[in-house]
Image (cartoon, rainbow, N blue to C red):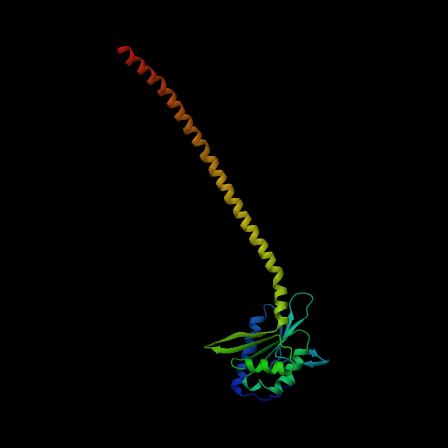
Length: 219
């Protein structure tokens, strides 16, 4: 159980709102389990042989289904040493990634606590309300999480590169074929014009010779 037994009502409402917004954001990619106070069914995960209850539990939607990671949402009151030792440590030791969401302005404190207690946090996100909406910003990502993200994106990137190369090759071939067709259409016209000019020149040559002979006879 969290050392913060009772949050201020305003913070508790904001905490629950952030959790529900994250469910909407993540449910397209994962099966999301929640551990809100008013939820009838809890979603525990194993950590060091014991059940723990993070705010959100992410399970992969593809087969075989496996635990992807857990999310813990904190408020300004709960970013402290007691919370880090009581909850962040066991959450980080559960199988999968550990994502920490804290209010904007407390990310440096959260990262310092994680480093001080050697908590393997995968990502730290800040949240703050903007009007009626909530804005989320990633402020920290571990080296292991970055490497995993690059590994997931490598193969799709290669496929996209091949697809783009094929598209470029196809366009180049199409342009070359169009140029060839145009050249073939223009070439016969040039030959025809050349032949006409040659025939006209031949007709004019005898006429010029005859005119020359008449001029010589008069003389």
